[in-house]
Length: 461
Image 1 (tube, rainbow, N blue to C red):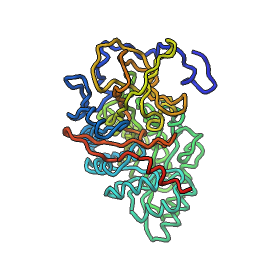
Image 2: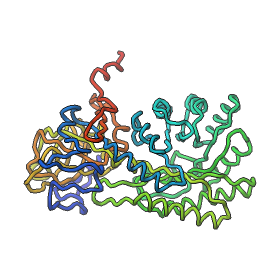
Image 3: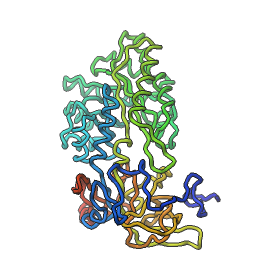
Image 4: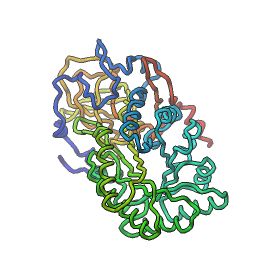
């Protein structure tokens, strides 16, 4: 490997791929943990989702297209709801949000967290019970807080002293008493990418525990007695597989809870431990089952409460991408296949960083398969790239595809339910793809494809 000023994605020259990636015995085989539960190969080798051939999806809706296995999403909601039967489970609106998905998670008994006025607007428009909404964000505007108060959202997660003052003033004006949590930065770094690790001290979220800001914030809310302080909130990152970080986080945040009790005689009745549970993007990922996570987190909280002589608070968790991430795959059409002097084979598809920025932004890894047919060809190590005017426009850095991959083939990339449509852009003036939900062999459009007319409608010059 050689260094490159634009980063490793540009300097990684060679055709060997990462050490964990091995040539498959069968290039057509699907790795079950990577795909929605209702995705299989049909008799002729094409992928089907909930009984519907992906070629039919592509013919009706075009490509690229995000394909949501609705029963898979609902079953993952139920898995977490069942595992955390005595706790509140919050679906992460930032992962992927539209009215249809809000209704799905509401029907399955989950709560919903939002972090902007736009996400709140979608949640309310879809009929999410406002008492089951938690409002996050490090810089909520007066307008956003006002809307949250008027809607009677269930929890506002306080993130700064400015926000405490802002919300207190608004609550006084309206004569209301909103329920709030104080977000605590506990100094625990999850084993994740620097940009999605959210509990170390040097970052924008929450109140520092080590510096005393978290304690000061909680005491200010109690002393003002305008906002109803229900508890503390901690979130240590995203794409987390190891529960050890939660043990340290719970110990520290419950230590603060005991400190508040000793200072004011108040035992806060709630605790939100966050979550950010990981999913499988490649064969190297091994996510924990919801039941195992629930048992471990309960044991951690109960043990620490015993040490601190605290009553066990009502627990909330935020699984993050673990609910919607595995339920969606993106379907592309191959446009060109290019062998570059035996160094690497590039398979170019009709989407790219405008519909999945995560590879370029986080150095994220994905998998892929040819979806429109089976192949008897040998496995070929390839890089799946997009159509944008960037050399870093990479969808899948390394994957074994059949050596006869060709223009017109459909390629499916699993694990794209979280953050792909949410972070999609119109780079190079490419309209964003639609989202199609499939259930019982039938597809329905839940987010339509953008058009060039949509792009021009915003251009008022």
